[in-house]
Length: 121
Image 1: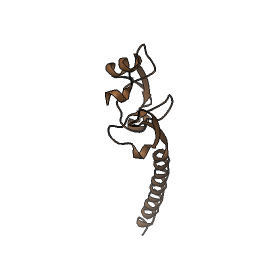
Image 2: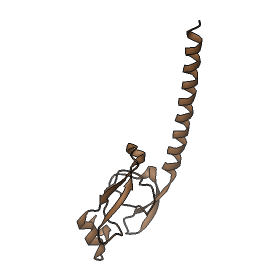
Image 3: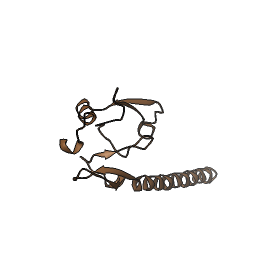
Image 4: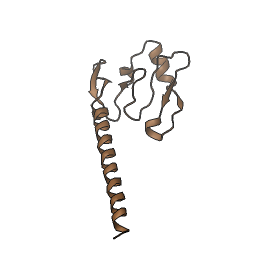
């Protein structure tokens, strides 16, 4: 009994902490999934969509200092000269340094010279 009681107490505390952490993660995930992003519609206009409704192939507009809602390909950036952006991936891999990402040259140039991304689709 002298070994079981302390072990059971430690396990109970650990289980309670894990349950609390899981609940907090659930709340954060729910909040993130409810966030609205701008999605390119078939008529060429942007409409709002919840991040949980984003599907493969959707063209989503992400503004500066906004969380990227999913794995994405960078089609265009307002940085005309370099077409580079820096992103943080700390939510994915735990690294807090900034990572350089470059947009696709064709879509960057196409949009920069007045083309509409809906024409590519």
